[in-house]
Each structure stands twice: as C-alpha cells, then as structure tokens.
Image (cartoon, rainbow, N blue to C red):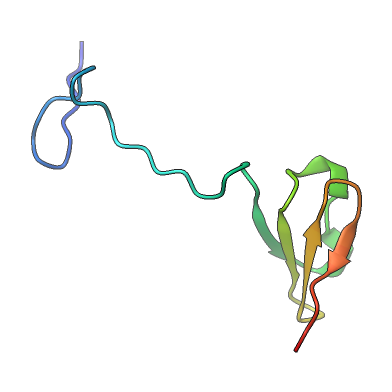
Length: 72
C-alpha cells in the first residue's frame, strides 16, 4: 500500500485529507478554438465559455444556445 504525503510531508489520512481546489461552481469549462469547432451548447456545462480565436469573440452558453458576450 502506497502512502501519499502532502506538501508538508504529512501523510494523507481522514484527519489530514488531500487538498482539493474547485474552479467554478458548476463545473463550467473555458474552451477555445476556431468558431467552426464550437461544441453544441448542450454538450458542455451551463456557464461555459468559448473563445473563438479566429473571430476574437467570446461566447457563453446557458445550456441551450451560445451567446456572444458583448464587447465594450
């Protein structure tokens, strides 16, 4: 059985659990690529973003459609 240690050298146990960092509250993703490669809006978590590198535009999904994020 392998023993895993934290950054301080203390073994990971139920009293010293492995640290976990959550980015985003619903698992949303930050994607990028060509606009032709944008995935279906329903295939990624709600609130995901897609940066269309060839357009220089940012899109956001509500889970049904992609909407362009307004520019200033």
